[in-house]
Image 1 (cartoon, rainbow, N blue to C red):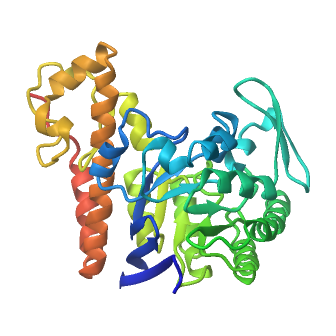
Image 2 (cartoon, rainbow, N blue to C red; image 1 turned 90 degrees about the horizontal axis):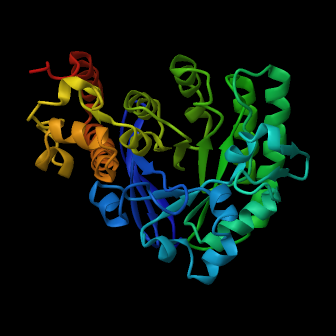
Amino acid sequence: MSLTSFTLHGRDGAARTGVISTPRGEIRTPAFMPVGTAATVKAMLPESVRATGADILLGNTYHLMLRPGAERVARLGGLHKFMNWERPILTDSGGFQVMSLSGLRKLTEEGVTFKSHIDGSKHMLSPESSMEIQRLLGSDIVMCFDECPALPADRQRIEQSMRLSMRWAQRSRDAFGDRPGHMLFGIQQGGLEEDLRGESAEALTSIGFDGYAVGGLAVGEGQEAMFQVLDFAPGQLPEDKPRYLMGVGKPDDIVGAVKRGIDMMDCVLPSRSGRTGQAWTRHGMVNIKNARHQDDPRPLDEHCTCPACRSYSRAYLHHVYRAGEMISGMLLTWHNLHYYQELMQGMRDAIAGGRFAAFEAEFHAQRAEGDIPPL
């Protein structure tokens, strides 16, 4: 009996619902993973993140290797104990962060040499060192090391990059070894090109992974182009393994991705928006900075059961944001994460009940109504 498994419980069109089982708990899919970049979801306690309905968090290999250091985390009992989150954790490989340091990095077949954005110190990340760092962190789902070119890019650049990523995927698999209870995900690349994505999927499938990510999207190509890729990319990947769309996204991106067969997503958006005075609701985005809220005794969303909506008015949320009070980011982040998890639960129920199309239509209709009128 494998310590980890993926079971599909229902389908509606291309949309799927199921469960990823790990020794640290079950992950209900479709799943949204809040991002805990530096071993914390900003402005939230771990138990509060769990209370929103999150089954799994994401940690960043790049940030954690630089500070506090993977060896230190391992000495202190691993990432779960270190950050007080006993449920599953997925760590990215560090590749995406390193790629975004274009001025501070050098790319070779071996890996990437880069300078720390913190103190300028030199580091090397390769498939082997990324696997070792993620092993020291102790994450449940490990991502193979890949290169992610920013879009738009020419076909030749995307092709070279994808093939390098596939060679790195094999090296990641070899270095990961046999780790019962831990999963390794491969990452499909190939830009917007269907044939290159297909070649990438074949290469990954022949290596064999516990799950597969659709990488290299949400990097500047726009929603329409992203959806065009998602119309074919998930179907190129194995049916019986989880499919993870990295770095997505806004609520309508998420609904569109699930509709096209994606099982897992992550994004900094709900927490980052919360710290900048933006609240995501079923009626779209509310900017709490706006003066229209300063005398408004109503909640952000009268149907929401999060602490921000249950106990505080728009007027109060406007005030604490304007005053620069910490509670502003705490309440709005809690609300945003709660809304995202409610959206995931709504989709899981809709897929299981065979009514995803109706769910999607209602989702768009409510957003089209816009925010409640000012008083």
